[in-house]
Amino acid sequence: FCFICIYNKENLSNKEGFPMKKYFSILCCSILCMIFFTSCNEPKKNAADSIKAIYELYILDDTEGITALGMAEEDINAARKTYDESLRETIRAKFSASGQEIEEAVLDELCEARKEALSKMSATVEIISEAHGKATVVVHTTYFDEIGLDADAFYDAREIAQQNTFPSVKEQQVFLMDIYSQNLIDAYQNVAPSEKTTDITVECVVQDHTWVPANMSSFGSDLALAIAGRK
Image 1 (cartoon, rainbow, N blue to C red):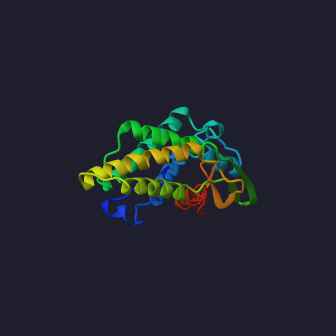
Image 2: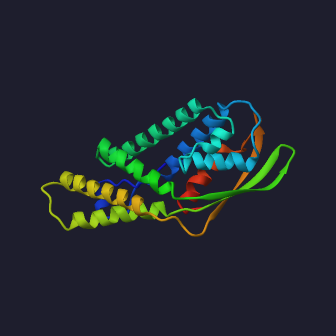
Image 3: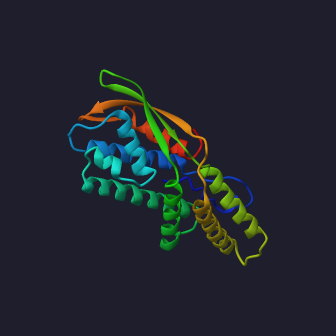
């Protein structure tokens, strides 16, 4: 679920990075597709309930709504596992791109801290219109500036690294990434969601007796941007 910016050697003196928001958007919408394409065919609730259930599952890690829609516990667990493993692998790949390997204990702590930050958010969903098997709903969600939070974590770590001397660039890089990772974990743990909300408009259709986003890719991308305060 992440927008972590991982930096390479040249980034010790500039602001270039590898933002992960596009990876989260792709990951999010691919997992959303899996959820409803594998769900059962019992009648479901309204469009607002379906969209709220997706939000609660992937943003709040709350399964109550998606269970009420009729998704089996086995499928829910499989979807969550796939999402978590894909996210972790994406973070590993971004650290590797910087020439570093993230320790599993640090990765665990980072993922848990981010999950804790997201669990503080909230959303309401309302139906704007509904007719002939189509509906328009609007999600009103709180957010936090995840990209800014990530950048601050890195820039603070870089400043500390530049105030020290190291036998090699490699050791400087290791030191930088260690401080950066801890800064990011601390930032997630201390984050406060916005008082205001940002809105996402979602066009929905009925598929296998379930209301789903008409465009999964667009919904996943919009949701990823919204929770990061970029919508």
